[in-house]
Each structure stands twice: as C-alpha cells, then as structure tokens.
Image (cartoon, rainbow, N blue to C red; front, top):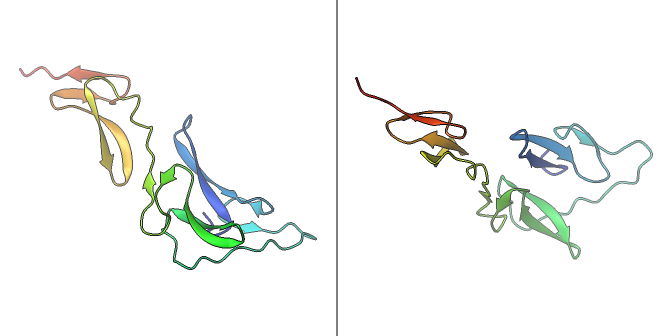
Length: 124
C-alpha cells in the first residue's frame, strides 16, 4: 500500500487484504493521486516515525501515528494484528502464527485443513 495515502483493509470473507486510497484520492491503493482539478489535501506530519503497520493521521490538527485497520497498539513502537482468523479452528486444531499470519493447524496425530476437518492419523 502507499505509505501515507492508502490503508490496508482485510476482507474476512475472502481472507485477503487490499489497499484502498484515503478519502479524496483515487487509485489502486498502491498508487494514489488527487483527481484532476481537486484541491490538495494536507497530509499531516507525525513527530515520531510510525510503525510499519500504522499511518500518520490528523487528530485535532496534529499528526498522530494510528495503527491500521485490524491492528492494535500505540502506532509508534507497536501495532499487533487483531486476529479473528482462528475463531473457526476445528476442535482438534490450534491457532498458530506462521510467518506473521495466524492459521488453524491440526494437532499432533491429526491431519486436515485445521478448519473444516482434522482426522486422526492411525498408525499401522
């Protein structure tokens, strides 16, 4: 996503992220620009360097680092993903973080997708 002119939005139905330009800008979220004949929008400046999962937004005329959608934290040193992806784990699965992504993984001695099924492995 564009670092200051777009936000990352998670779609729980498709389980995918997409970039969306902020209000007043057009584009695909990676490239955002002002529409022709539009007045420029002042992008606030933050005192601190924002966390990579945060945006600098204007609050009461000041630039403030705020965690992006589906993240929680102070916006400067911490923005942790709010994960609801593991609410649907199978009863024989555990939610695990693998390369910054949470997913349901079948427990030991079980095999499956971790959400719809986890079948016991029979030794033999």
